Length: 179
Image (cartoon, rainbow, N blue to C red; front, side, top):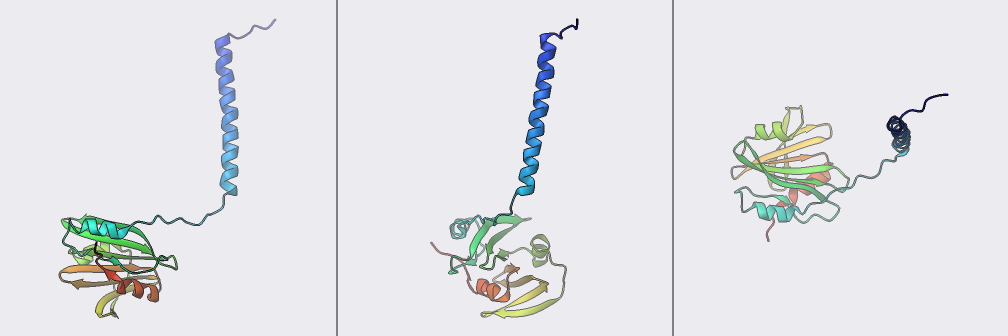
């Protein structure tokens, strides 16, 4: 006659087999879900940049510029007051109607420092571009554009992947919101 294992040994081996079976089922299910998933449309998290701007106005001397008066197809996705070293930096990022990114960055920090921190463009070739009544220095590379100027001691930098029509519309709409 064969000897039976003690009850405690049977429980442990049963538990290990059960966990192995459950792990195998979970692995199969995860593999199935992974290979049958569909890419869904990206959902944009909209922020109320105007309220953030008005709040930031009490904490900084910078003009908290943003796109005032654009229609609902322009979605603000970020707005923040931060620092580069000792200098305040105001930033607003927007997704354009063609789902491209456009942002404005304002600071008293050195333009070169701002370009290194916020912009990933290799080109050093600068031209100028007039939008509205202002002349901007322009660095353009492939689809990316950077426009910048200095106004009242503040460096204003606009980064865009949008076409020139949308970029121009964004730049022309830049204002400090009021309550």
